[in-house]
Image (cartoon, rainbow, N blue to C red; front, side, top):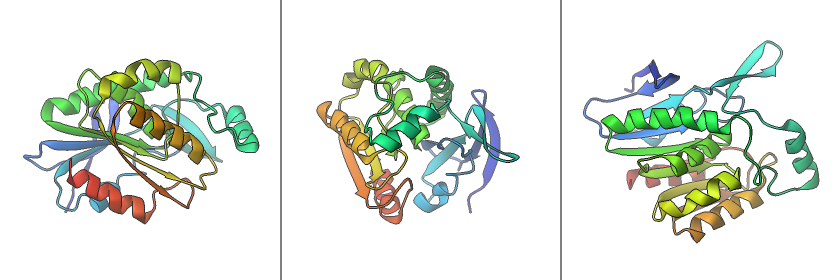
Length: 230
């Protein structure tokens, strides 16, 4: 049975589950308004054999999500731009600018990635929604390339920062998923992102589904198989 612990790693609060002797690890980042508890159950659901150590860092920014309720985030979201894109159907609301706070968040996770890579020969990094965007930025700027990248309901972001780096990771294994009815981050933007992965010859597995901003059963099944081949 898995043992979950709270640890401070590279200056970040993390939920961690480890097994002695493991050489593989997954770093998984939650989305905007959630926290490090949000995805922690995936360690059990996706890795019954405990072949991976799992690291779930907490977002570096507090965000109000309701009366007397607080979540975490990686960088601030321009809510006006997001609402406008939802109203107008803009498929790439954040693609052409680098959001404030992106670099700070990416640098924080780069530190965690480096720390985990010291003790694990195979490290997978990924996330959901905003966490997916940060994990991609980290992967593009990491001195040591991760073994694979997970993009769960992510989107195009910060192309002026991303495009110069995309060509250096040819052959990277990528798992991507997105709902065709996603009301928050348009499916069309995920298609554009998948197009960039293909253009630069990443080894892409793209799983889509008819639902919204979520991780449904068909994604879980495919992701479990993907991790088993890393």
